[in-house]
Image (tube, protein in one colour):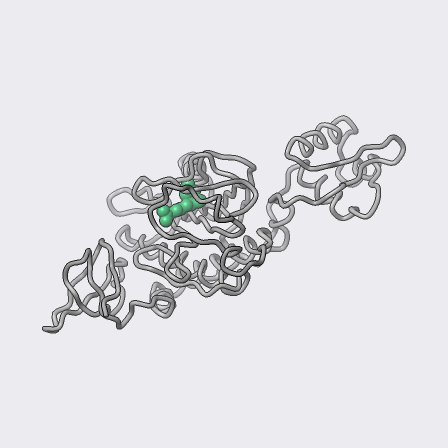
Amino acid sequence: MIPPPLSSRDRILALLRCHADGWLSGEKISTELQLSRAAIWKQINSLRALGLAIEARHAKGYRLLEIPDLLFNSDVAGELDCRIVARSLDILQVVDSTNLQLKAQAEAGAAEGAVLVADQQLAGKGRLGRQWASPAGVNLYCSILLRPQIPVQQAPQLTFLSAVAVVDVLETVGKVKAEVKWPNDILVGGAKIAGLLNEMSAETEQINYVVLGIGINLNMTADQFPPELNYPATSVLLETGQLVDRRVFLRALLERLDFYYVEFLEQGFASIRQRWEQRCPIINRRVSVDAGPVGTVVGLEVDGALRLQFDAGTIERIVAGDVRLVN
Ligand code: BTN
């Protein structure tokens, strides 16, 4: 895939990173990027405003003093192995909510595959009107714009698709074994490590767009979770004691999402459903729904409803509710 174009700021940062062991002259930047000295100086100052320590010396040029854990397009965009996802990629330092911003872009006609990532969210949205804690510098907050030509009722299948991709990358990059909890929580040892908020705009029969919103707790420490959180939560750091490189994680996540989305468009929901069921500990187990009826979970319906079989043999569709294992 052709990588999305980088801003002047990110191209300068990429050059500085390549020359992190020494000085990079203004002349070299100017020649390589076709930028005036004044434009370079402006971008250097905007990088400094983001917290990067850049030394400037007359007759020597610029030098990166330390590489902070900030997310930049230049770290992620190059040579992604993607066909649809990340056709355009924007990484912002602060937004209210990546879902809100990407929905606005979708309304304005943004193309399928657009990805918006933020280092920090000031109004991160969770499900059921909750907030999603989104401190700077530690986690991943990203939204992906899709425009699948599928019946509206099948849109929930994309939630299962994103859940499978997140669980995979938590395992391969994060080195934690996560599970899916119907309908769309991602847990490690019963504590929530990631959340999915997929939002759709549709006419009666046709999907305009779906925004897949994904929040993953990577390097968050215990004191960064809001005290009012009323469910157990965790992060990769808390589970493994290891910091995760957010750039590596994000690249792997975008590639995995793309792989599953292309497979979904070409072959339908069957293999996503199978993968989700493999990652779901309640399949073939007895559960209660909202502390009420008890039955055995026998799988997922095509619209994402849970299939619950009662002892008498009847199967019921569960479309919402709190599902818990019973002994
Ligand atoms: C949940 O409550 O489980 C869903 C949380 C979803 C959070 C992500 S972070 C990126 C995207 N932007 C948002 O405002 N929310 C989602």
